[in-house]
Image (cartoon, rainbow over all chains, first blue to last red; front, side):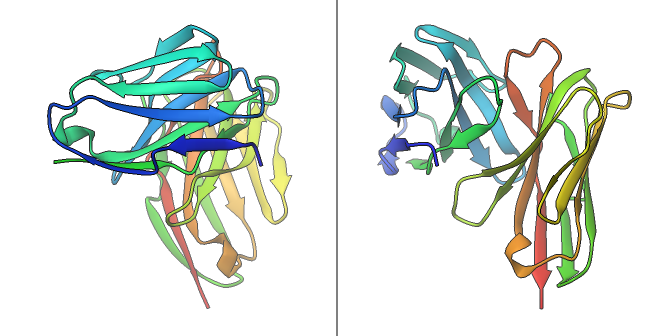
Length: 112
Length: 111
């Protein structure tokens, strides 16, 4: 399994506060992704990165920003958390050629 | 736009077969299949690339009809361990490894 960790694993925060989720990988994979998972919606792509400092929006990017200053780290920031952002967030990585994605364990975020 | 999966849920008895379908409105380069067990992360099953090849993984196989932008996942002689939610993910032609997932199909295998 790819070495992918997410931190924190659980977080409860209040509406209006900034939140940063971290994804760390030890596999030197080029591609990294942030998804959110909600009942009835499956996995939805928020942002993804195809290299250091190279990022692009996914289908539900409003209210989220990302940064990738190193190959191993991909940060997801909620500038001002809202209750609609309560979700389980998964990070994934991909080496590229094989196109397979490896998922991290997920972060459960609750915005009160 | 998310691909459409059907059925949304299915219950099988051990040993029975099932088919899960996935369709997209976009021209596709690849289709991915993942399985997620409750409380865990999704796990890769297989990928089908443009070219219509059929791939297999134990008793789970899949096909990809690129003309119809459709893929099907075949589970034969189901086992209890097959229970979980199955997601198809599609990568559009020129999609640069950006995968869009469907809402999933919940599969439950009972004794």
